[in-house]
Image (cartoon, rainbow, N blue to C red; front, top):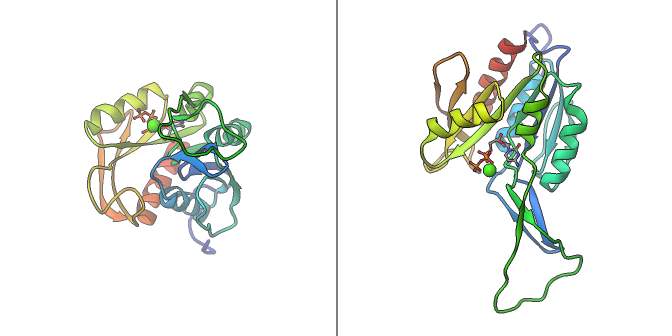
Length: 221
Ligand code: CTP
Ligand code: CA
């Protein structure tokens, strides 16, 4: 709940958050997707709203959201791309917490495919939303990406920071149990350009979301 008299460092700022795992349709009853509940992204959207921001949540997750947040439900990476791209230029921050599918089926069948002995799917690469917004970014805008890694966290996270022109990469080790996907807690490391990596020890996603939003407030104010 937004409390009267509480500090609202993001008042007047427009923030876009993406969440959930996109679904890429094979046919009307089948899709490929990534493991992601959307909990982290939804928590970030709520935390940004609590700090006074005008928040648009573009989500592929069915989870509910509290607060006066504009919610745009999408399914595929293409839909998420379009929803982000059309709103990005007028925003002050974009937090890409979504697990965007890297690939989608080259053809989506309009009718249910009948099962057969073997099925070969050809997948095409989806647009990299964060990277594209990184190219378009103005200096006043803050761009936050996530990195889910099973190994070489620091190396890969720093590479994503550079290659996507992000200001902050929130990295998590998805190889460890009890954190990351589909659970309420997470342990992450913040990678940015002018600070040493900062480990945020295992705690509720809601609390991590607050740390992320505080980092953004410091960056844009
Ligand atoms: N991302 C995106 N568009 C994509 C893929 C990823 O915007 N098509 C964003 C994610 O939302 C996340 C960041 O890029 O904030 C990193 O995603 P991740 O899957 O860790 O990295 P990739 O660049 O896709 O590389 P890889 O999966 O090979 O590690
Ligand atoms: Ca990926």
